[in-house]
Image 1 (cartoon, rainbow, N blue to C red):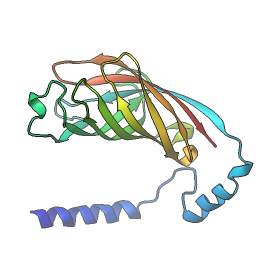
Image 2: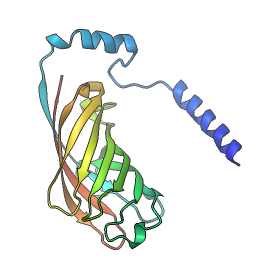
Image 3: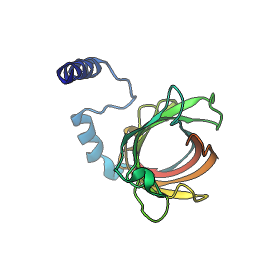
Length: 192
């Protein structure tokens, strides 16, 4: 079974790598090098983004799933050691049927013994508009039960190359029974 899974993964990777990608920006090594050589002539700009993150852990089609846990995770008041992998929709509005503008793809885990604090390691992958094909990378602490949480933007790709900034999160809706949530994000990012 393991050998079959590995063969399927290799076939899938080969098929994906052969697919053309239209990003609107040349990501070849030569183009990236030229971009960096011209960086001193570029002016830094500030971009503000606003979207909603839909983290669905319940039902038939979850967008976040448990991938690891410690033996003591479910006896911990903070679920310490629980790790989720996500591919959450980013939308224009808080409604589940709102227009999708991207995905939040990555990992978050309960990383605090004393209170509920998540370690967030994810990419905002934009699929619409002028940011289509570009990403922003987030790495930081999310104190999920605080009204506002600030997480650093530590990089990006596409139009957000060499990005840095701050993502501010606010939970709009949380179902304590299912764990599903909708989170509003305000992002301020500096890039060239």
